[in-house]
Image 1 (tube, rainbow over the protein chains, first blue to last red):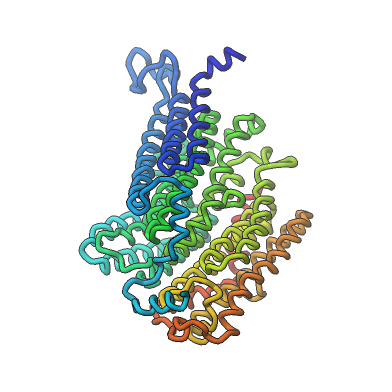
Image 2 (tube, rainbow over the protein chains, first blue to last red):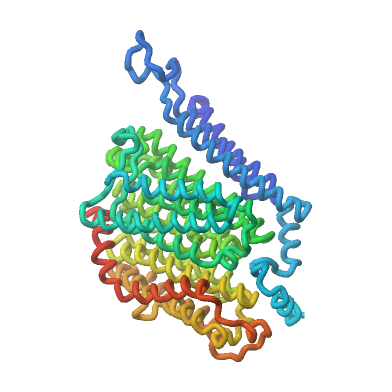
Length: 146
Length: 491
């Protein structure tokens, strides 16, 4: 059992990171910490792919004269390429998430999920009416409610 | 001709870029560019369907590299059917006036139209990808566009969009992890090649884990009960046109990916036996139908009711996938189209009501039918179809699902489908009782008028579409869906 764990130590590490990320995403009440959890989760998956490409004693995947075309002597470059793409996608998602956090923080002054939810529940539902359409129409609706 | 799949994507990406460039100058010009892009994509999708029907599947090998080394885009009967649904709904939603549909006259810097085009491009990419990793990239492209679009709906929508972002990313990352398992086992990412490699090693635990991760990830993206938690918030606070797009086509792309992977990548050995991925999807779908319908009955907010109704209707698609027989799959795929048309009609009606009266709660809708008869008539058609009243589209998808359930001998599903008709009628009767039988109570309703033709046209087209699809159902099923299911199901 112990050597299995040792042989696959990187995979065990990946699983631990996945668990930490999942915990952060689902259990933390702080939105910024949720985002950190998400990034940890993503990174764990990137590491999983990179570890899948690892090969002891192999060299960079550029064909060399004296090594020939034996595939076992070269590292598999495809996972690296996939992860490069996934990283770019991940950065895009992170950018959108951070801009949301910025907007949420500017409005509510906190990252605490429960406080933001309470804050939002306290307000009347606004938005979703057309700005430039009869402003007084909207006021009437407010009056009728009170 | 083989470049057609690429052309479909290129049209949308190029017009998205152009719309992004002209937007800061004139939003009106960006809208025109977006309409040209969506209409062009719709034209290509129709051409694609015709070509696929007459000459068979179109495969484009990117850069001339044949798979499994190269990336391929596949436009087969199922994919061409989906592209038509996606681009058609996309165009109709873009035609709906931006002021009401997207909740604002967009400020010049807001790249609203490029985001819609990007969303459509991502969805088309998911549908046409012949490669597991490419599918992931397109899943994320449409997801990023979605998060930004939901965020347009104000403070609540921003919060909902952030929570959706966390869940959506979790879903696509689980999918990616599953793909990683498959890649390390088979050494390939091409769907057809992976399926071929898997035949010998289907019962290995790695493969089972891979498919478990993929199914959970995609079910999260598709909002299959009980992984639907992000959907009601995101769909009810998003601007109406965005909600229409999301409910109509966005969640369906993940459902499509699920069908594709379970039916044509997963080895059949994995699908035999007592508790398999497909049956699990079917049972969760059935549970989702009941849960979503009951929750919909309890809602006061019209859009929130529609959002829970989406959870229920996605359950039908899950149930059809779970049946995994011919009628079940036909029912599920037909429901993709039917639900797209009727739910987008209802969300656009919600947008019209909001624009004309500022009201969003059902009890305050009293008497709207007298003030906005045409809009409410279209809504009633869509709602009748949702319930499953015979000549409308919704009747037929339920009919095929019922037939499939009887064929599979699954009486629990039969009961759920029957009961769902009553539950669906339950939440729509509540709305239309207010709208049709009562006199206007609210000042806003009493002063409301039928919106201008620009608002009416998309809604009426979709409402009429419900009936047309219902009447033309046999043509769709025998012409398009029967060959699709014959190709998907192992015989």
